[in-house]
Length: 118
Image (cartoon, rainbow, N blue to C red; front, side):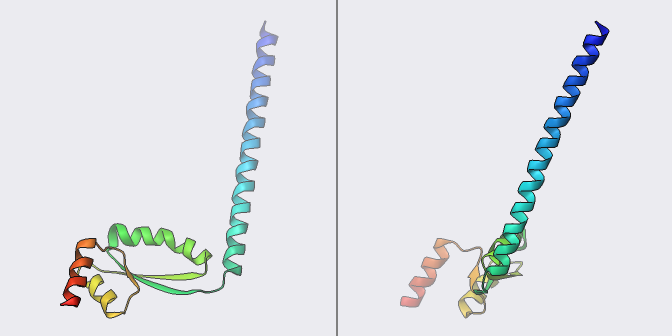
C-alpha cells in the first residue's frame, strides 16, 4: 500500500511539473513574440507627426501615458501637457497651441459655436 501511494504521489508530481513547464514555455514564447512584433512595428512605422494634448493630471494624463506606446508603434509622437484647471486646456486648443484637449464636453462646444456665429 505504501508503495502504491508513493507511486501515485510521484506520478502526480511529475504531471504537475510537466504542466507548469508547458505553461511557462508558452507564456515566454508569446511574450517574446509580442515584444518582437512591437519592436518591428516601431522600427517600420514612419513618423506621422506629433500630437499635443492638454490634459488634467488625473486621470486624463495617466490614460494618455498608457496610450503613448501604442501611438508610437503607429508612428505618432504624443506630447501631453498637464493643466490644473479645465479652462486653460480649452484656451490653448482654441489658440492653436495644442491639437486636442482630453476633457471637452458638448455644452461648452455648442456654446462656443453659438458665440462665434453672433
